[in-house]
Structures are given as structure tokens and as C-alpha cells.
Length: 359
Image (cartoon, rainbow, N blue to C red; front, side):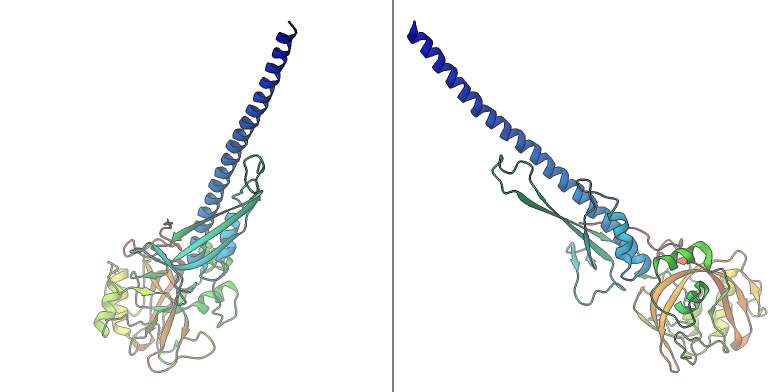
């Protein structure tokens, strides 16, 4: 009888040990499941953060073309939390190679000519149940995303052969004459909202030499010679073209001006755009409705007999009319927005045509 009671107590002790061991195993598995779920959630939130930040950075890059694109990106990044908190994101610009599916960040790539942005974020934290699942207490998760701004204003073939100084547009925003500092996001917002309602001279006449920095550039009428073009007939054909068949021009390119004023070809080309009745007999005419055209906004122009323009931005302008005769001819218009290439003869104003999350 006594022996039976002892055996029962011994069995009870064994069961308690087994239960204790089992509970330890169950608790460890539960901790592992909870920790794994947390890590997966963190990784997912971190990836969403970098995806959103990269998209915003790509938009900002082609919108302002200066270092403040990261400010635009960070305003989006702060809205995407990881474990309820904002995380720091770093950015780098590059050129996306569609053949190798890689980002070129070599020294030749700058903010001015980049067409892709990589956003990277890292989360460093501690495990809730590190001891139970046999791991160290700290861990780190890193995620990145690359956005390609394919079809951005980095380059376009939808251009008319005219160039207007960036400074002349900025004057309408209150900047002093000659200011060619990069446009800020606020500048572009103001321009696109209609701050630039004044008539601008898109192509100057003989008395309207262009200056961007206080230096008058002799013969700088704003008439461009596209690569491969030669003379008056090609210049007029580029004005009249509605197929975007001009050579591809990129931001940072340097384009030579046409030799001379090109008054006659300018008048005839604009008359075709505006459907005027007599290109040879009208010195002044109004374009109704005004056609949308994309032209170069240049940031610098050299002196000399054939000035050279440095492409800074592409802008959409409404051609309102033509004024003058002979060497005094002028093409007049109003600013309508930063340009997106493609879409035929009348591209829709806007800084980006598409953003592609490529990696």
C-alpha cells in the first residue's frame, strides 16, 4: 500500500517535469512565431517605405533638378512608418541601364542628367524574445528600391528650335535679371499655377539680343540649330513638324544657334503652326487657339558670332503670335509648365510622364 503511494507520487513528479519541459518548448515556439511575424512585418513596412520614398525621389528629381529633390522624397518617407516610427532614408541618383538591369552611379552621372534614384533604409532594433529563441538581442534589416524616371524631362525630341533664358522666366517670379540658379519646388509650383502670365519673347529679333548673366551675347536670337540640321529649310521644317522627329536633346547638352536671324523661315513656320492666312504678307498675326510647343530653357549662353546655349530645362509654351518684319521678327508666348516629352506635337505640361519601380 505504501509502495503504491510512493509510485504515484513519483509519477506525478515525472508528469510535472514533462509538462514543464513541454511548456518551455511551446513558449519557445510561440516566441519564435511571434518574432518571425514581427520581422516579416518590419521587412514589409521597410520595403513599403523605400518604395514610396524612391517614387517620391524620382518625381522630385525630374521636377526640380537640384539637391532639394530629397526634401520632396522625405516628405513622403515620413508618412510611411516602421513599427509606428519614421525611419531615415538615404538617396543616390544614377542612370538606369535597361539592358543590364543595373544602376550606373559613375562620376559622369549628376543630378542634371540622372534618370533614376535609389532609396535605402535600415531598421536596427532588438528582439522581444531573443533569449528564448536562442538569438542575439539585436538585429538589422536593410531594404532599397530604385525608380526609373523613363520618359522624364531629362531628354526629349519633341522640341521647336527655340531657346529662352531661364532667367527671363524667373524674373516673373520676382528674381533679379540674370538669375539662373536652379528652380526650387516652390518656383515650379508658382510657375505651373500661373505666376508666369506675362508675354515672353521666345524668339528674338535683331534688336533683342539675349543676356542671362549681364553679358550680351551678340546674335543670340534664340533660334537653335539642331544636330544634323543645316540651314533655313531644316530650321523651318523643325518649327512646322508635328511628329517629334527632331534629334534627341538632353539636359546639359550644348546647342549652337542658327547663323543669322532666320526671320523669313521663322515667320513662315509660325504661320503654319497658327494657320495664318498669308505668311509673306503678314508682319503681325495672332495664334488662335495658341498651339502648345516645347522649347529649351537655357541656363548659360556663350558669346561670339554663333552663340551656344546650355540646356537647363524643357518648357511648354503657348505661342500667342508673331510680331515684326524682317530682322525685327519676334515669336511671342506664355509659359505653360515644365515639359514631358512624347505624346505628339502638343505634350501635356508636367514634369514627368512615368515613374517605374524597377528594383
